[in-house]
Image 1 (spheres, helix red, strand yellow):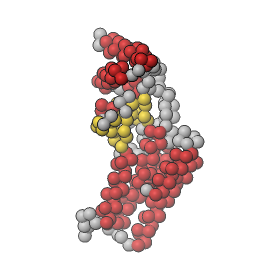
Image 2 (cartoon, rainbow, N blue to C red):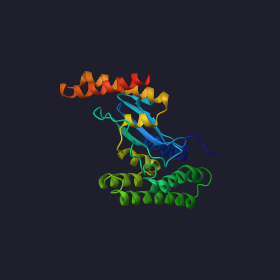
Image 3 (cartoon, one colour):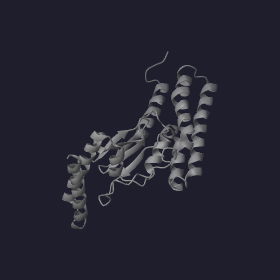
Image 4 (cartoon, rainbow, N blue to C red):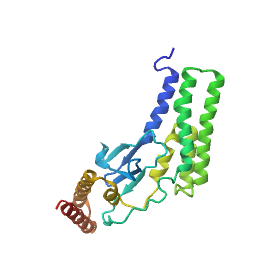
Amino acid sequence: MIRLFSPEIQLLLVAGFFFFYEASILIYENEAILMPDGRKEWDVKIGPKGFKLSNKYLFFSNILLLHRPVYRLTWDPKNLDIEVKPELTGATTKFSEFNYVVYGAAITIFIILPVALLFNPTPVTLLTTTLGIYLNSACAAWLLLRRSGQIKFGLKLARKTAIECLLCPPITLNLVRRLSTSDSLKTSALAACYRYCDELDWEQSKAHFLDLLNQSIEIENENEIESLVTARTFVSNLIQNENI
């Protein structure tokens, strides 16, 4: 009989907590989240679409699509070129080598481990399951160290993440998301919204960036005000021209 809040259940709850914690993404008001979308090419989400926590916004990407990268974009008011197509060549498959380890972690932690703990908790079964989990984490750590130079993650950060995967295997589940949010794309949040948002989302994005500029003008020093006013004029004209 399965007891509620037994040690086995508590272990699974801890694994689930680390999974959802790692799946959460915090962004600032001038940032956006860019991710591949199965229905269209890319999907963009700006701050107001998330849950506001202090001066940041909380997002959860699709927890079932562990292989899908999530990129963090920023917007510099000095960069007003929204017509240039974002450079996203290879962005969807950049971390495809990690697909096996993230889904391997999902299978071992959320399918094999619960079955072993709740229905067949023999020493051999538990030992085999534990070895499978840590073998998968070891493969993730090896991939991280091997590709640290290619994915602009840095050897120091790769070593830190590899150790975390070995000490806490549920972190491996969100490895692609962690790597992609730490990566950089040569495009701005405003340009991505202009190209990939639908009509309603684009209207909300323009209003959001205009409001952000108005707030920035009030608190910035005199040296930065001129560029911010120029950016505000640009976004205001963008809104007016598209409403004609």
